[in-house]
Length: 374
Ligand SMILES: [Fe+2]
Ligand SMILES: [Fe+2]
Image (cartoon, rainbow, N blue to C red; front, side, top):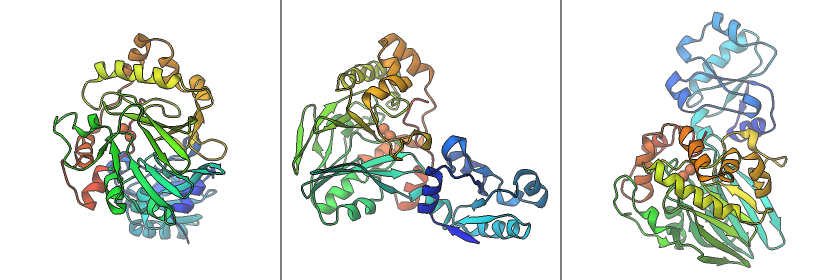
């Protein structure tokens, strides 16, 4: 029986292969996050103890490959054996969802003579982060908790600094850790150095980021644009005047939510004003966001980016932002989803107000990101 690695699963999902994913974890774990693909492909959940021949014959056709997944790959292996005996074409996700949740893919999205942008895709959670390289120098934007992929990527380069577009709520940042490891500055806007719920200042070192601050590395420059709304210290970063790391502001089919500080009404107006700033950028600006919500958002090169002029027409949140504050507010406030309670603790971790071990960190990050409206 074929064992599929997380990297192979990522490739197969991106390319739109047709197969069945059978997730034998309990329903609660499945509901928090499960494997999703293109065109509505979604794992089928039959918890381990419910699997029997009747349910198999009812729910699992024999004409398609069935990939069985569980937490670590152990209970899935025993279900896979049973399916195999019944004549199914079976494969197994090696090391299970634990491996899938941590899997990060590296893509090259821009390659110019003196500039390369790598996009790091954590497919299971829809998180995007970036390494930008110019003339032997590198920077890292919005790194995730596991910093190994960035360390590998910058191996023969000089890391200049690390920057978070904002204090994240959906995942634990690797920003401060990576900066410390390489003894370089870690930048964050000081407004995000205060926890919005606790109203306590950060208990960690960071260098302040601010409106119009210019960062230089290699032959490239990065201009910081303060865009409060999703958070008070939210930033977008414009590289060489044409690539915008939009963080959590403009995504590919929607915009970020303004309610995670508990003040949705007032922050929606700030969010609207900030989006007006970004809408004034040149139409050809390439938007490189910090999240995607579905693999259907990838472009023809399987990257998660799009030009501003395209998004002005196709992105529902951005379409509303071009109408009026009233229409935008109605759209945002009527589409808000419940904020996950763990987001408050993740923000505490990200500014040093709380410390967690690896097990707790994985638990806090166990759901899919819901940083976007819809
Ligand atoms: Fe965010
Ligand atoms: Fe986010």
